[in-house]
Length: 320
Image 1 (spheres, rainbow, N blue to C red):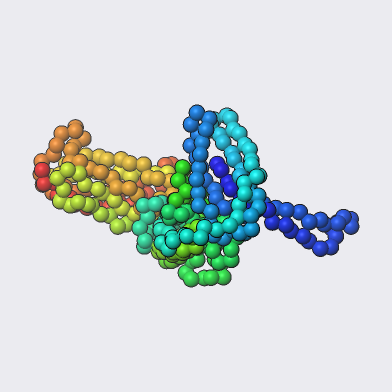
Image 2: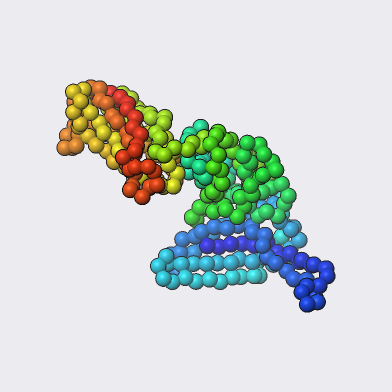
């Protein structure tokens, strides 16, 4: 994990501390220019990034801090404090704002979806010059605002995580301490390294129920010939559960059962694919099929009963 810091900042506090001990001037290095992750191959790695405009333009020594791990039982750390930082590129022509994707609980979330209390804010951020999370310039922070309340603006700089081997995109995961039922709109403002800004928005609805709730059941394409996608939204945001799709023919006979694990902390899932075959693997005849979607909960889910579950029905046409 490489982390690149701007030049140290001198701090001074006047007066004296406990027991009349003088408080002295010292330097801190906390202005982060870039945080990322790199792949190590044969003991070597490399990374690149764009220095944001929001730095001290005077030349001076910055610092690179490095941490590595094999993910099992070994790690390593080091630093380099002779990296010269300063100046500015004179011919910069970047005037394209970043792309700001705002989601709740899952990157498959659709605006207007439902969730349980205390959801997780997820951001998908992209820009060719990288996202500015240095925090060194007033007004250029990565921030979130709920229902337009500027007095409770959330600064997300420290929660940004650059993608592996790619400084042009990254994600944020931030827990929202919202428990009251209702509909909320969240606006996220991001700046790129060239100081272009963009705002992303999503709306979510918090509901409190003692059982899973399924909404927005859709099937696409419908009719279909090769495969179809069955998707829905639900109110589980911190529970591992199983989605179960049971498909019936026109005589009411069960012909196929599909199961897929729901991603922990998701409100809208990737689709559950059906290829038109039955449980025996053979292709089914063309016609209209009815399907039932339900959520199977673990015994320790905290809901009233694992059997206390919602179910929704839909129809799909197979043209083969």
